[in-house]
Image (cartoon, rainbow, N blue to C red; front, side, top):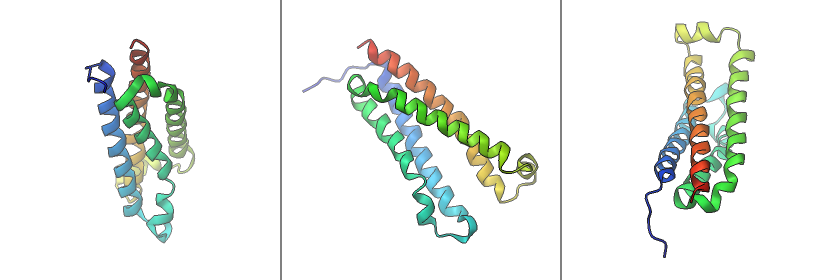
Length: 138
């Protein structure tokens, strides 16, 4: 049986795990609420399912960082792709994104999701870099 030691990466792992579950639940709620193009929400929820892997990676890091730190680069690449995709979505899909943000149309909700998730994903990538560094010291 392994004893609990208060390593610094355990706190970061708890914060990361909490962020990832809130992010996943928020995205599921957003896709159900928006119902883009009159589609049923179930096919759209399949787009969010890979995001559950980020939650699982953060959960495993919380439990045993030295064993699972090899998945750190995969997490960072996934978060990087997510940030780049969100930025491309903002700048290339709709030229009136800023005006819609100010006017408060239905797109405001989708734009707000992206503008809130980009800093959150960047923060989670920074946390993973710190956790990987701390995990190597163990």
